[in-house]
Length: 196
Image (cartoon, rainbow, N blue to C red; front, top):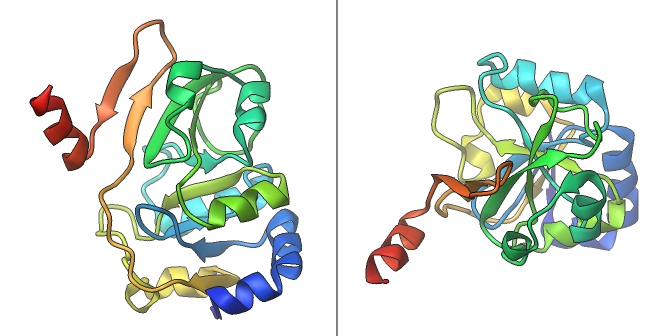
């Protein structure tokens, strides 16, 4: 696993963006935790991540979208909730058409735009990126590159080093029907809801 410091990555971002577009499997920072991902339109790398993490197809992969316009173009959106992005949210929409190679249901896709500098890289790449926690199925997510499982280290092309990241997971909101359904809410959001 090639470890790249944030400063070095940004200095040579054009090269690494091409790697991402070509199908590299890599580790990257988000606003919640480290993610493992690849170009979500490439079936080979997506299957490789699934195989490396284990657990079969029980948990569908979400993607970091390269921008809100990409989401509007490819999904049946809800503008009220789309305003929450960028932020620690995963929004599940119905797709207008099959736009990714992730193993999700035929019509649905979870999308994110983390409030993190790496989202700008995804925007510049212009492709959706698989976003899933860095861990083997059923184990705790890695909060830093030092505690990444050996199997995953061997499976990725490179990793972006950005310190320790240990924040609550994203709030998941299902927007496939008229009424929004919160599937998972962060502790912070739970406290805010109680105050209302």
